[in-house]
Amino acid sequence: MLCLAVLGSVTAMLVCSCGSSGSQQIRLSAPNPAMVADGTAELLRLMNEARSKNRRAILTTDPRLMLAARDHAESMAKHNYFAHRGRDGSHFQIRMQRRGYPQSHSAENLAMAGDAATVFDMWWQSKGHKTNMMNKKYTRVGIARAGNYWTANYAAPDGT
Image 1 (cartoon, rainbow, N blue to C red):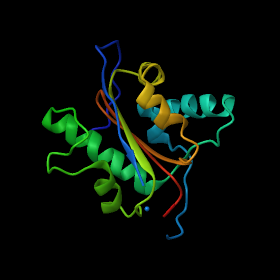
Image 2 (cartoon, rainbow, N blue to C red):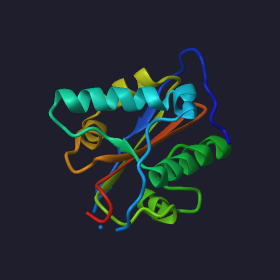
Image 3 (cartoon, helix red, strand yellow):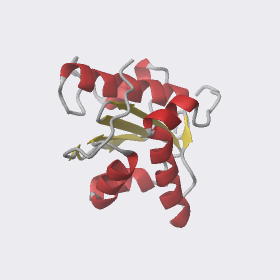
Image 4 (cartoon, helix red, strand yellow):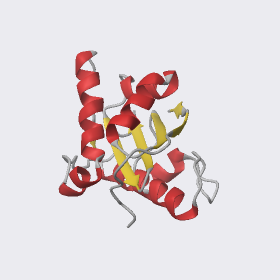
């Protein structure tokens, strides 16, 4: 696994994301120690703080979305690319379905940065990324980091 914490500042890049729409019961999880160590828990905290201030439901991590986000972040880091399409041509919704998340309203944000605060600020300043973070339909999230590659997969609850 390539979940590495990188210290210092780095040049940041980002790509605007897309959204779209589609039930089983799944146990939702809270941030775990790995999320704290790699900064993804901090990114979740920042997103939920903004959502709360704007009267949006908080985002809850979903293990299937976490795996889909991790797969993509690690692939980008390992193969040195930065794109919403996977190396196999997959779209984020396909990656989410591969990890067991049913088709639903969903979106993906990507960033390349050294820390959670920078990622959040970049996304907050980008209309498309901010729309994804603040979308009322999305209450589930998977966040992953591999080196300086960050992926956040947002989704409505199963099948909605």
